[in-house]
Amino acid sequence: MNIIVLIKQVPEIEKVRFDYEKGRLDRSSAGAVTNPFDLNALEAAVQIRERVGGVVTAISMGPMQAIESLRDALARGADRAILLSDERFAGADTLATAYTLAAAIKRLGKFDLVICGEKTVDGDTAQVGPEVAEFLGIPHAAYVEEILDVEKGWIIVRARMERSYYLMRLRLPALITVTKDINNPRLPSLKDKLRAMRMPIPVWNYTDLSEIADPKYFGLNGSPTRVIKVYTPISEKRKGQMISGSPKEVSQRILQILRENKILA
Ligand SMILES: Cc1cc2nc3c(=O)[nH]c(=O)nc-3n(C[C@H](O)[C@H](O)[C@H](O)COP(=O)(O)OP(=O)(O)OC[C@H]3O[C@@H](n4cnc5c(N)ncnc54)[C@H](O)[C@@H]3O)c2cc1C
Image 1 (cartoon, rainbow, N blue to C red):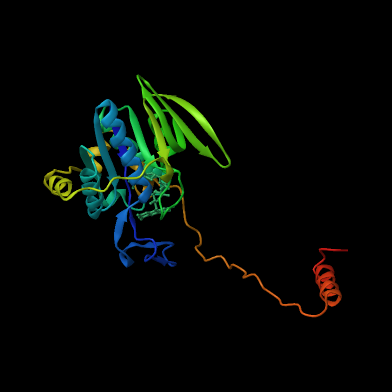
Image 2 (cartoon, rainbow, N blue to C red; image 1 turned 180 degrees about the vertical axis):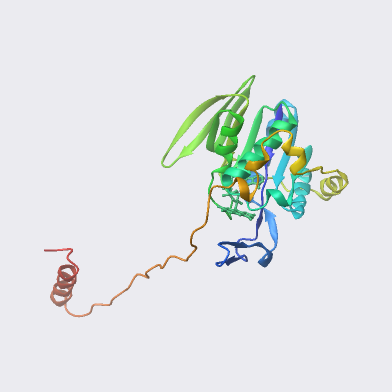
């Protein structure tokens, strides 16, 4: 089975600052880690390969430093990894990101399953997975918390939906996005890390993907989203009030407050 896992490198979210002028994260203000949900996606892929055989390919789009996340993916069990990196991919919104990732998947050739995290901890839109599926013209299931079966040509999953869940049977090739409840990602051993250090990671650029897709949809030029304004919403703190006195005085005061606030007529 040919499985592709999409992996995004994100800033350490508790340290990163926001650039209000430019309307985006100041990524230089914090270190970078692999998006935690993508580790669940990778673990799901490796578990399927361990059961039915095949190849797991990790793909990331980002600056050259994203190669560290791909190296970590190789240590955690991916068979190969590809980085999509070019200045002309920069400034991509979710649509251009998904278009570029889908172009890379098409360039790889035949595949059975694409697995993404349910969302990232920085952008947090949860749009990229379903958009990639649309660009590839394949079915998808989002928020998958259990893979019940992978059989010839099909995958059966349980997907979370607020307080209920869907049982879905998808014809392969398909795409799923997974929640953190699907598994516990394995930790790589020192031996795995050393092996990953020696593995080559090809970097595909604008020219490589222009053979497959229309380059006018890459990067900032291909991004219809425009950030108009960025601001921190004012969150009103709840106000507490102590009421003292006899039970009669306290209940009368409560009634008065409820009437003043038009909660009681
Ligand atoms: C107008 C605009 C300009 C932007 N400019 C920039 C910019 O200059 N630089 C910048 O870094 N970001 C920029 N962004 C943010 C960028 O759109 C997102 O980083 C990206 O599209 C992914 O969206 P997300 O983080 O919400 O992913 P989600 O949709 O929440 O991610 C879901 C899953 O998709 C996969 N995935 C998502 N992104 C990638 C990726 N890059 N590689 C591999 N897999 C991935 C992962 O499996 C992930 O778990 C911009 C956004 C907007 C709206």
